[in-house]
Length: 260
Image (cartoon, rainbow, N blue to C red; front, side, top):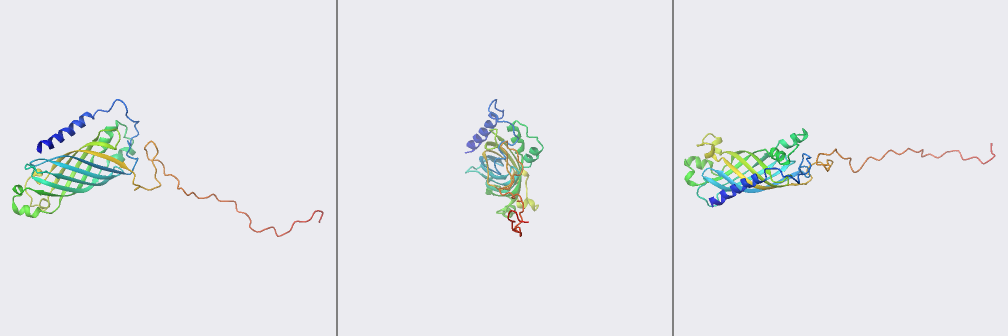
């Protein structure tokens, strides 16, 4: 099973190298958005390998990110029956912050190549909680193991993803490094270094899809070039003022012809 996990990691690295160079033809015009403003929510999911103390494990990652800027994430690892990894399984969830896209976009720094812009903008910070299960042979001292059992710890992660296409929606190869502190570590009773506490490095192959769920103001629109358009007028416009007519009729009747 360990050889299968390593094979997945090598395959992800090879896929990144094959697609790293921009294609000679077929690149769309540089608009700086690359499909990121075609919707307001980015849904992401992927699988891969996680490398931590003892050996590699299978990993799965998912995220929902609003306007490619902020959202939530989940991350799961499983040793799938292997004896080498210290952590048999772990689960993490938290806040995903991806600040570079809008800052670079409004500063007109999205000039291509598309894959490079998307790769730079993918830099993200994740902060959340995690839970893990460890093998009994590695849970010494026992008092620390009992104090940490079932209690969430703190996870801080940095991640980036490389798109295989020139649009944000499509396959991505990602790398994610996470530092973890168990509850006993935060209380000052933990032992070991960062690796012992649960630090891990994950490589994932994922799919990103931008969808429109109308979380933004309905008055905002995006023009065809992908850049934010001006706020459109409301569907109901104020009617122009009509010329006010005098509702009272002329009190004097018309005079007959020849009358003085």
